[in-house]
Image 1 (spheres, rainbow, N blue to C red):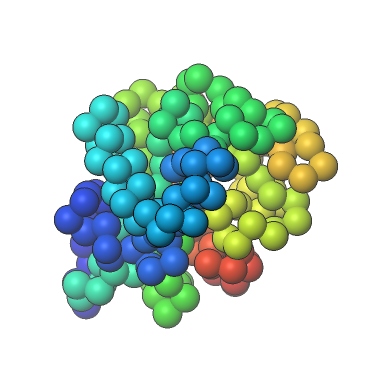
Image 2 (image 1 turned 90 degrees about the horizontal axis):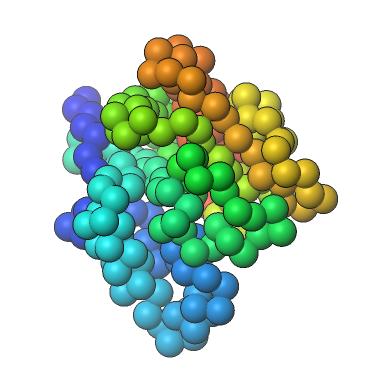
Length: 205
């Protein structure tokens, strides 16, 4: 069984799950997102976001393949590149943090260590950019179709609430060093990646 981890580019964007391929929940502000969905241009908007983020900031996502079959992915970026990040009551994301936007491993590939493989790639990328922390907007009700991470789960894997809210708290995970990333945070985020599903439900790791 061969496994490989690659950066998300315009060439492999279609390897994302169909629902995620056209999802622009994070990439556009709410008004622009609704307009794109109504016009059927969400797929093009996704491509435009990936293209501009790659050009201006660099790698913003990873896809893991098993025997050339896409098995999972993760998207992340500084808040400056994530319009939706300013649309929450607990915005904005801290300037020194990268936003964990979304992540998913297909259920049929869960439990095979792919989450660790994805996180190793992300950790290497972010530590090279001297990122200080990861932040995420948690969802206390889990009703956003899997686009957001459940707040209780973020807390359970080491995130701390820095802006409380009854629905969308903002949580933060400090990355004090590359070593602490690999030893302490990598396993926690592996659990997070392996548990996310399109419906936002948690699955046992």
